[in-house]
Amino acid sequence: MEAMRKLVTVPLSLVGAAAAGLTYAHKVEPNLFRVRRYEVPVLPRGVRPFRILQVSDIHMIPEQYRKVRWLRSLAALQPDFVVNTGDNLSHPDGVGSVLDALEPLMELPGAFVMGSNDYLAAKPLNPTKYLLGGDPSKRTRGKGPMNDWQKLRDGFAKAGWLDLTNRTDRLTLPGAAGPVVGLVGVDDPHIRRDDYTAASAPLAVATAEEGAAPATTSGTHSAARTLPGTDLTIGVVHAPYRRVLDAMSADGLPLILAGHTHGGQLRLPLYGALVTNCDLDRRRAAGLSTYAESHLHVSAGCGTSRFAQVRFCCPPEATLLTLTPRS
Image (cartoon, rainbow, N blue to C red; front, side, top):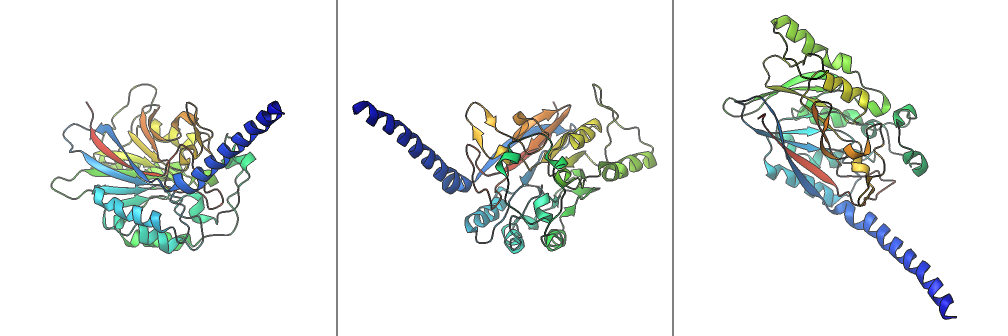
């Protein structure tokens, strides 16, 4: 009888631990907002350091007041400019909450790309397919009910943020001798809306028109394309698919900013992310790493789909990147 009680006690303990873990992952960790900080040595010598605040994967649901307050508080970090790498929505009625949450940040210079969840209404996920890994864009048709993404885009643009949807632009930072930053962005590769050839064409054309010989990168990379008159050019994409990262890195872009992965959303100690939800390898699922000869920063984001509101060992985040001169 004693042996039987022990056999019953062990499974009950496991059930209790699993229930506690699920409660934590659903109720606690999704609200443990944090700011990660990195220093990235990518600037030419003589250019003053500046700071980029990257926000990503907000996945706003109406009445997420704690998230709104935290996002509004980020303006106190006083970044030089803001980059939003998409997936702001997880509910069709979330546009107003996003614009309210980002209002203080939209008083700063900024730029943005869209993610699939900005365009398409969120829907329940099949966990089995999610955990398959590989290249989900081959399984994603990008069809279904649409969000009012134009209202979101217009709100950002009205505030002066640059729309980097398959296009290149430049941003002059405020202050004496403010650095000039080139930006090249693509639409979301996860639903195959990316067109890097179109996005990067102005860089090559502008360089040719000015008759400037582009700088070259070491290794196997081709000549770097830098928008003339800028101090560096940054790549911006929502989902870090390798076809886009390969193209940006081959063009010598020293820094690429992306989101989409949620850092894996579910991570295991000593193992890390289970999946990246794209064809990027798991070790680059979140944080700063190198990709070929580029620095790659993938934000773990600060939200989740409304149909999968769990995070484990992967708190929601925004990132403050301090760009410094190369040594």
